[in-house]
Image (cartoon, rainbow, N blue to C red; front, top):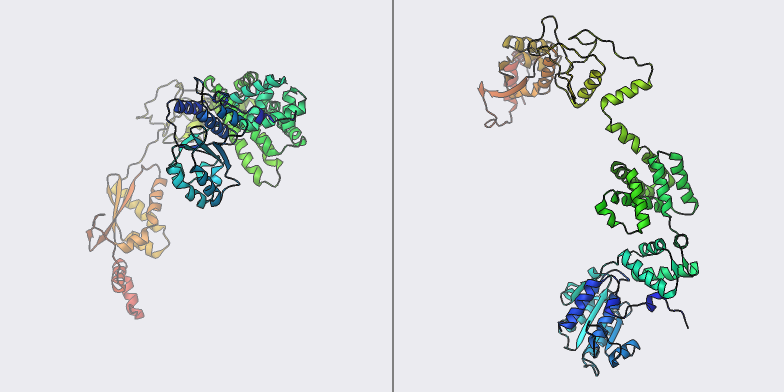
Length: 582
């Protein structure tokens, strides 16, 4: 007897034998039972998930003369026997991949005109219907929209998006899903028992995962490995036959990364390369391994793993050793390495660099989680040259101690370091009224979880006279004559926390860059509080508000007049040089 591949030998003949499509088979059986069949169906989904198989079973049951109580074909009537012998005159199959012309569709339409001689329906199964040409689709539209009562069309395709919307609107659409790994493994167990093949659970799981949801692909792989292993399906044989990386590699590498063992991690990767695997296969498998470990961190998501129970327990055990921070960081590094691998000229460098980074993840996490004082103490413990600070008198600071007005994140941490090494004062000091013999005093606050210490300084408040004094001092330092004259021609006025100056448009243009510098000059004088500088443009000694002021273009004569008002000596210069305005 000639050998028949498993995909054909174990092809389902009844709805109950279809693997992984229970929702669709139940819907079709109920439609037949209730006599609510559509006249055109569209079965779409990935390859090898049962589209054509369900189409044939549906056609067989529809024409069965005595269906069973559970809406299955009897396999005894004339229609069923002729179908099983591939001699049915009422069921036609057309491969649209090789019969996609207008003439092929016209021949099909001619056949539709004739009623069936035996049975109730004529069923037309068109496989790979998306391969039909545009003209063939248009020729098929009218017949598909208004077929004879005895005609039923079942279209099947793997690329639903290529079918015209006018075709889709005329069909009852069924979306076939990828078959789950557990369903494929269960079906492979049945085949192994039927063929008396000894198979390991892990081996069948690898076959199912490699099939990527397609049962036909799984059966093809099964036939190949069954021949290779000579009736004994072992995990090692499957991995060798499929040229796959073993789970053990990734568990070993992850253990090395968690132990910060760079040598083992790099040598494991080198061993993978020596076996003939490409680096992208290794890094992709490592990404999947990290993902599986992260899934095992929560008992509610463990079910997302399509692996055997033994392997699932192994994942859960290693997941307890790896923190979520480690897994997320490692997964991010591995993903970046996978992208860099495609463009790198030195293919192994991105992956080796990624492994080295992963070995340092736990160190970074530990250092970032330690309190600042702990880090300081550990540094002092390792470095014998660092001496503890000398105790100072109460209520005084050590020489060159930095004073701050407000604790920022950086200064707060620095002060916290200082606080843990300086003896704290036991005397209470009134911050608002410091002692007369101490100009500025900073007192560390000994409270639990304190992150910053506020330093108190006496700040000088400006008066109108001091504003004028600093204004003239700054003007004296200016080199540019125009800017210097503009400063000297203006008298600033102190209004609360603001310094108000009134100036013309030309003066504003000359002083535009110097006004912010003047504020900086103020802050350098002793300890002056923060003040703002407000400029108001005036014209003919009238102050214009921000809402009413509109800058205008000056004529040359007007510009000269404004310049002379600012500097009267300019008029004498124009007269002596006999200058004319153009």
